[in-house]
Each structure stands twice: as structure tokens, then as C-alpha cells.
Image 1 (cartoon, one colour):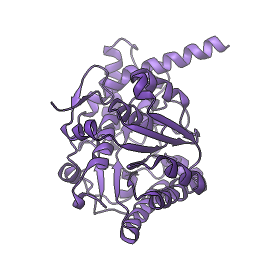
Image 2 (cartoon, one colour):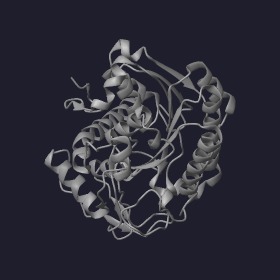
Image 3 (cartoon, rainbow, N blue to C red):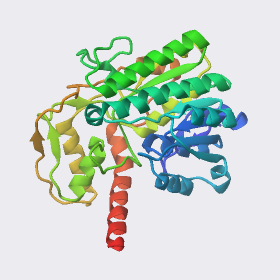
Image 4 (cartoon, rainbow, N blue to C red):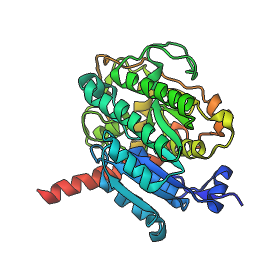
Length: 365
């Protein structure tokens, strides 16, 4: 019987036969950025699959609260398979010690400073984490036991190239320091594959959203930021005319892709980069309507005013739409969630998280 795992779905098991081998041959996985949004979702699914996980994070943008939530979803014996190392990927010795002590079969490198606006305001910090930290983890992985290195890249690599859908071998010039940092990561990964034989797989994420994505702060992603604003009856801001479009990808799809990339055996699949998305695009105006209507239908909010339109932001691509043919062919990737299904799964978490935060603030004051 194929292994069934929630893959972040508390009530709906999803079957991925490719994961069967993990039942009989458990592996050790090292996740950088494990306390963050994507990292903690990877942690939860791998522990649910009875894997051994070592996590590295400096807690700059991640949170121990994410660990508390993961612990609620796995059994005590599964939680005991997790070891956390608090440390910074910008320190090479920390990376080496973590790899040496864990001897991972697969490294899932998620640690990064995201956000195009952040990178424009502070390119040095973004470079130090996204490029120097990335190179440190490549070196540490190479020097340990040549574990497979699966890393998070970004659709920002496509830059100013106008063609749609985006295909992996056709990119433009980066439009932000963030995009440049991710393009540099891909170059380094390719060089390490050629020079040292390191097995690398790059995953170009397209606008990931879902549970544990922080709705607060100046660099919050659009979906949690808008949900937060609607629930608080605050104005929703759209940069531009609202016809900017994105290929929004629920985090369960990203978890699936990472595990498949860690397991794939075909040597032709190694050394490539893959778009990880749904293969469809949604305008910001349509996204606003989807979120507003779903919150209203669930009676979490009443009427919502029209959005407030602001000037286009520097560094933002006009449209983003991925071809996922390569990931389907070589990794066996098949998205389990559309944007609508992802919103159905994640809105409840956003609403509960915001309510809990409000209660904590009120109790504190």
C-alpha cells in the first residue's frame, strides 16, 4: 500500500508512492532555515515520515513557535528524531560542524533573506546570507560526505525576460539584489557539480504561501499581509494597477518537490534547476477577490473595502507564470494544490494565528 502522509493536511491524506522507500530505508536530512516558514513545514512532513532531521537556524527570521506547532502534529517518538542547532550559515565552521556531526544523506538548504524590497534597501545583508552563507553550506556539504544538496532558488532569477511561461533555460537580467543573489547561487551549485561531483538540485520557487508564513512586518508576503489587513479591517494595498500576476504555490507543493529532489535516483535529474509552481497565474486583483470572498463566506469578516492602489515597486516583475514540465518529467512532481485549494487549507491557520497574537498582546498589556 502506498505510504500516506498528511503533507501538511490535517484531515486529507495525500498519497505519494515515491515516498515508500523512506519506510524501509529511513534517511537523515539536514534543513537550514528550519525554524522558518518553509523549513518548519519540511520538518513536520519529514518527521511524520519517520525520518531523522537535523535543523540549523539562527532564528533571525524563524521562530521557536514554529517548533512548538510541529511538535503538536507529530508523535513523541517522531519528535525525538529532531535535533536543533542554533547557528548562522555565514559562519563556515558552524556549517562544517553541523554537517560533520549529522552526516546527512540530503541537505535541504532553505536559509535565506527573502524579499525584493529588503534586498534593495540592504543588499549587503542579503548577499552575506544568500551568497556567502550558501557557499559555506556547499563547502561544508562537499567536505563531509558529498551529501545531495537540494537548494531553494527563486523565480526572481528570470528577471526582465518577458516570455511566458517561464522555462528554466531562458532567463533575463535580475531586477533586484535578491534576484542576483539567487542567480549567483545557481552558478555556484553548477560549478560545485562540475568541479567536485557534488549532487545538486535547484528548486525555483514561485510565490510560496501557506501555514506559518508570517503575516507581520515590512517584508511580509502578499497573501498573509492581505489576510491580516482584511481581518483587522485595514486598507489592502496593491502596488500597481492590480493586473500584475503571479504563479502562487501552496507550501505543500514545495514540500513535495524537496522530498522528491532528495529521493530521485535518475542521474539525468541531478545538476538541474526546476520551476516549482502550479503552472497557472493569478492577477493581484483576482487574488484580492478570492481572499475577500473566502473570508466573507467563512464569516471571519464582513464587507471589505476596495483595495488602495499604490505606485509600482522597483524590482517587481510584471508577470510570473511557470512551466513545470521539467519538474514533472525528471522529479515526478505533480502539484497537489491549486491556489484555491491552498487558500482553503491555509486561511484557517492565518485567522487562528492572528487571533492568538491578538490575545497574547491583550493579555500582556
